[in-house]
Length: 226
Image (cartoon, rainbow, N blue to C red):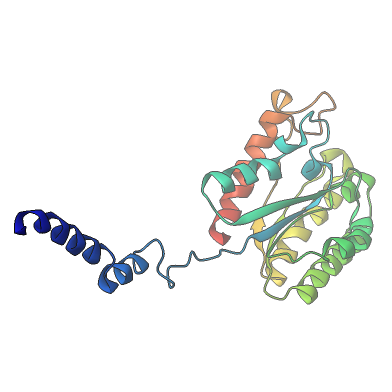
């Protein structure tokens, strides 16, 4: 009789142990289901590149290969929480940019990269007028987003515009950068301007290789801000 009852008794004890309160509580406290185990949410921040055809990637079949798009690729490869907005527009002048910036500021901007003035220079627009327009754009960004970090890309004009004009034009950019505490890129087209194999047939707009160099130039200034 005892021999027949022993297996039943052992089975009952095993079932009781598996369903004990201590075991059920232990399952609830495993790391996968613990109530306090939450994954932190990282906010994605926006970088607005605001400029001319140089920013827009004029002449490129794939606009994502313009230097802002190449910078987005670097950001993604590093796993940084930033999204690039390409606000480049071919033919943009500083005056037109001052009108256009308003609607682009409807979306929160954390870093602002300003590349404007080249078309003013090619048209011989008075440098004081260009300076005022660029300052107005900067002021609008600051007013809307006081904590926004800002980068200014400097430009130059061809010698055909005259030495006096060229000097006054180039001098605008470091002055604006200093007065507004902006990170300064002295010349966006450094090592690209005038290089036949780095530009399109028009000799003005960079090709894919040229944009790669531009991305390197801007990245050096931008990366410390990320």
